[in-house]
Image 1 (cartoon, one colour):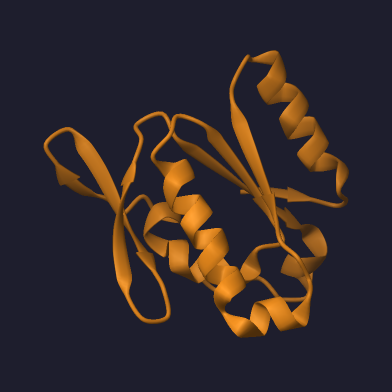
Image 2: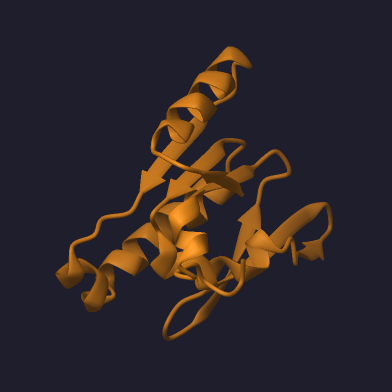
Length: 125
């Protein structure tokens, strides 16, 4: 987790990853209340996340508060092992899906300091 005071932190992280020649994907949440209430937006983001976890990319996520609880096992590195593969549970409203986690996968959650100060951050953090 990276706690920042502005939006420039994601640019700094991208610059650093580029300088290290690392591949990364950025997912930034929308604030459209209709999308968030429908649940389909969460499913879409979690589906993307599931496939990214299987790669050796870095995942940078910001403003996706609504899915953080679904990724509890991933964030806490609570993995199941099968042979030499790691799996984490992704919790959806209606199901729990076991998803492979690539050994070289990393996730960076960027959180604005105000979210922490205003206690709007999910309790899992």
